[in-house]
Length: 161
Image (cartoon, rainbow, N blue to C red; front, side):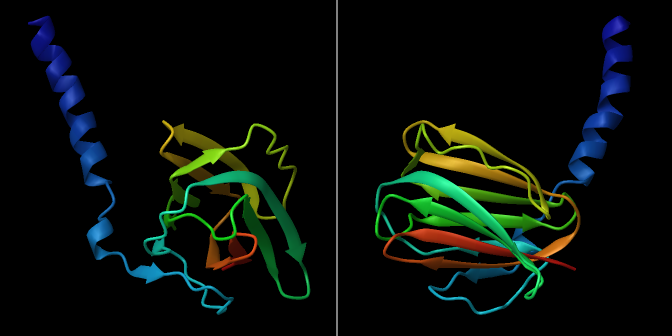
């Protein structure tokens, strides 16, 4: 009887969680470019293609550009090209999820500091194969994502919606 009561309490909670899951199949998928395009989006999937270069994330920089109205977030890598990137910008959760394939985190990447639009950044190393990064935003924002080479960098411009 105790087991049945537990099931009856837990079942609605489990069903509710599945009803709020994300349907990534309906999201637009963007391939990021090697230059700034000023194409801001509120939500969706982005990727950089098939670069298989092993890399190390050595630093993260940021700066607010009041004249342009955006905050720039830059991921610096030790290689001349950035690694393969796969990311998702969630509008509802106010987060950016990024996977850097074949990438590790440098032990001396430093402290990030305070920013205008970013609440915090969390790192999740997945073995020696990839690095997942979660960027929590302070509100609803649009982003423009692109990469630069020599040295390899991933750039995210964050603008208030």
